[in-house]
Image (cartoon, rainbow, N blue to C red; front, side, top):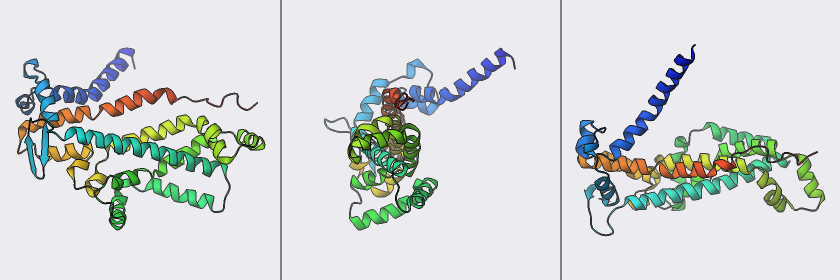
Length: 287
């Protein structure tokens, strides 16, 4: 294939990939009439200020969705903070648990280790949606349904993170370094905190990013566990708002603007943590 043909295919692929995002940005700043007509490329139909104002002042009360502009009105900010809480705390806790478990599976010997790790691999194969109903029954028994804990606690368990952490531990933490630290008198907790964890920091970051993205985009678990709209994550809140678009067409640009702003935390997290995605952290540690 000629260079022109290859470049043409690459340009077409790029346009195909980014066109939905460009359309979403333009639709988010367009008026409701322009979005409903499909005319989002006309600069005369842009109404960014009104869409932002409507987003931060749209409130919900049961089955009623209304635009209010009084002080303190609006629930989108609450949903946004809820998502940051669920995704941030859940991803951080899940990454810590996964790295510790993966390190233990790799560096320690105990009875039934491979059988137990086989169960972890089975957990990787089971879709997360298949476990939501059992999790709901357990949460109902524990009395945490419709609370923050009903979403946070299941987010701490990540079988794929444990598997990934074991791979990183085997590749980045040489057994010779561990044995040398033990001979120097380092305890197991200090060994993991001071030697093991810094060596697999890139693995920790990878697991954190995967789990953060999964929790931020997930809404099925929250939809089953939560009934109080003040506890909704932003994904679930926008899902319910979208159901009212047929009744309230003016809500469509608000939903699009909310969806656009919901992308920002993931972009910020990925860009700010990408410097930790580096290999060779243990280069030169073993002669």
